[in-house]
Image (cartoon, rainbow, N blue to C red; front, side, top):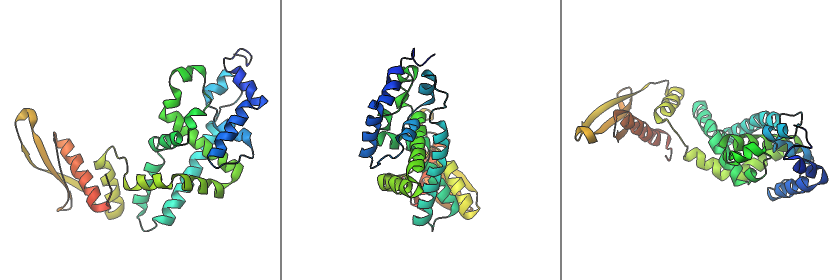
Length: 251
């Protein structure tokens, strides 16, 4: 497909004429960013599908995404080290993993209206690409990469923390955990070098509506209690209760 025949070619040429540039510059200013090299920001917003559609020899924002991933990890790690240096390495690693996962990053992308700025191919538009967490998260990392190139690490770090510190703190105390047993075991292994075990205490009710009660333990000490409609669910509940008791997680 040539640029001239592309359904996005008008938008591409408007970029040269300043329409797209002005839109992106105004958006960045609402975020507290006075762009020096606007071209790098536009690249961060260019999804590979759009780059291919207009026949540009580029992978879009993929390289900036790669850079932004490292920048994000460095900023979050530094923040956690400075503010929560009393935590164990294992716990800090678990918190960092929650803060930099795609679900968290996609929410941050929506908070700043990044979904409205991404350049997508016509096909990706029709597939609701702006709502895909993977595209949103990757674009957020690419944006961080462009801020770093344009402004340096000090500005990038201050911008990220100042804008999202409340959400970072929220994720620290209210982490989104899908598997409480795995999360608990990894944390306990890092902190105590112990194995978490589970005992089924009792079950009650008719077979079609039985309720199970389990406890989580370190050695012979009970650290959590839980109940559920299956043995597996009761163990997950016991692990969740243990995370509240041991690590004071608000989950």
